[in-house]
Length: 238
Image (spheres, rainbow, N blue to C red):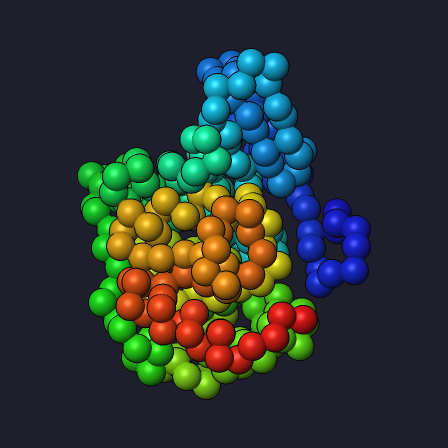
């Protein structure tokens, strides 16, 4: 199926729905007082809230999924009192898992011993490698101007990476991920993974990222400050 609305091709599959339903059923049994918000079935607010909220994106990168590209992943995030605390990105096809326990971030493949993640030390845009899912996500003229400016400033740009790019940033392979039009379930699980590996992730104006929108993630605070200064210098918000 294709989701309604005036947007680029945005498919939803039986895998999206079945995956989220399976996670919701498990949470309903093990954490009945936790709130749940997912891409396919919306929000559940418990009658006796615990203060925890689970964010579910069963297949982030559905377009890649239906083409057989292993850049999609299952995103599960946990917020405590509206603060992102735990995060998981699981790519079952290649057996990779990126996750944060709230204190550090880790990677494992095929259930091997986890390896701690650490971001790169790149401090300038000229040295940075950047990723974005696709140029079409920058819908407004302002968004396109910002993205085009970054493409001119950075060393290299790669596309088609979806949630995998954020995990590669946490693992020290990518320096910047810049995107627009994200929902909360697109980013909630990735925030702890990036932050606890040494990176930064905010909106383009430096606000907390958990609500989604225009998002920029960078490898370290120095590079993040340089990126936000670049956006501020461009100006405008349309």
